[in-house]
Image (cartoon, rainbow, N blue to C red; front, side, top):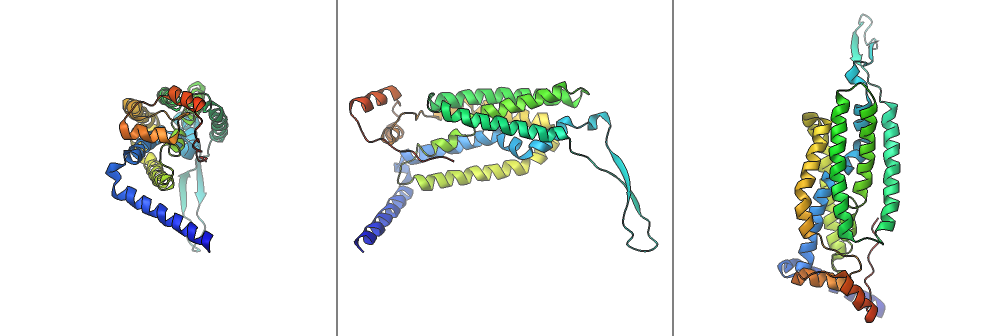
Length: 295
């Protein structure tokens, strides 16, 4: 009974602290500032094109590798079933067969994504979060522009050279995005928020990310119809270029920093110095913060 009362007391105290945070959110910059940072990074994440490629990879590369621009559509005449004894209705329709190269492209891109995820697990231990994110952002913009260029050239060419170049650009885009733009918003949501309200903040940011994901996937067919494929990814690159100065100024460095120091940074707008943090940890051992595992 004593253990049960203690557990109930802890649960009630956590709820009380959460309500206090929500009611006095203006007095807690260590909560709303990281929250806004993750929201902005989630917007950049969706405009990187990774979610669109992952969901419409077969459709995109079927359009790139299809031979429709060479007037080789397969036209078949077929008859409807006889619903009445005297009806003999016939209809001429178009049947488009999905290119096998589209499925091969999906497999290749999936392999590149796997390799990028394995490389990310090693790079996170060696390089700073901020540097990795900015490098990933610049590489993603370059790959988006390259993919748009080759998609435009392949639309007016009968050769397969530009089509395969589009696939190569998409593979490098997936690799570049996976190194920072796609993954670090989820990672930072486990490093920036205070421990007693982290679950709530992570749930809200994940909800925002899922909402943006659904909106982007639903709007992509309409945007692609109006702007064409290369125009859509060109717009994506333009949006990322606009967000370069924003992410440069708001993105903090969290590698090798304790949660207490990160909260102090958001409260006082001081400079985060990882070297001084490492020196202080080596001279005076302090309990480290165990980050949650991000799946």
